Amino acid sequence: MLLDDLYAGYGRTDVLKGVSAEVPEGAVTALVGPNGAGKSTLLGVLAGTVPLRRGKVTPDRGARAARPAFVVQRSAVPDTLPLTVRAAVAMGRWAHRGLWRPLTRHDRAVVARCMERAGVADLADRGLGGLSGGQRQRALIAQGLAQEADLLLLDEPSAGLDQEARERISRTVADIAAEGVTVVHATHFAEEARGADHLLTLDQGRVAVPNTLA
Ligand SMILES: Nc1ncnc2c1ncn2[C@@H]1O[C@H](COP(=O)(O)OP(=O)(O)OP(=O)(O)O)[C@@H](O)[C@H]1O
Image (cartoon, rainbow, N blue to C red; front, side, top):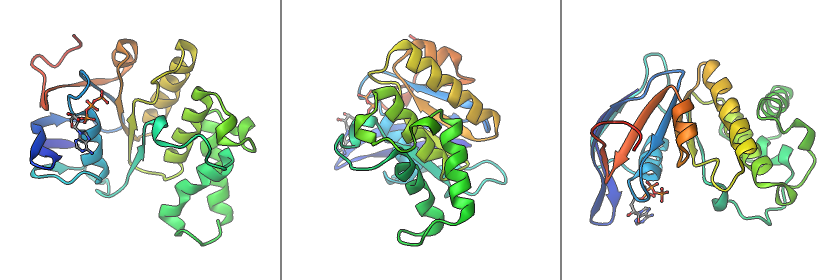
């Protein structure tokens, strides 16, 4: 996917100020940079939730442009949401099924497979609110996977998690990319960024020069 001179922001302020970069297909791109650099804004642009003011995103050849799945920061999901893991992951099928249509056998198989891939199959009947941070984050990743998107966008999935939980998420993310999904993974952890296939460093709304870890 090619990002060409992207501008986006809120109100009168541009947050992204001419971001140009290549995001390789079927690989993990770590999106790094200090607080406020524009990482979440760029993810929002790629997800279609933040409008582009200028510039262009060219999807990979063969990929359908409008097939991103956005795994938002865990803090954006209320703790008290009365949902089991299975129900939360099944919400990922809404894009295919519509809100009130019952899930088909195929949908249920996809949900089961995605819980397996994200390592939450054994938690399927547990409530989201009672899970550990790492378990909850993996449930949200499973929900993103259930959308069967070409592009998986992860906004700091490891924030607040211990090293073991972070490593588990890194492995899951690498496996997903190995299956051909393009992953953009915003992170503040240098070890996660080093483990990625590609690096995109933002600084004050621009690609940092050089595009390396600080
Ligand atoms: N919904 C919004 N409305 C107005 N300003 C916003 C909004 N979201 C983000 N901003 C501002 O845009 C700038 C970039 O924020 P963004 O969340 O994209 O950065 P970030 O790199 O993801 O930061 P962090 O590492 O803290 O998550 C910040 O100055 C922030 O205050």
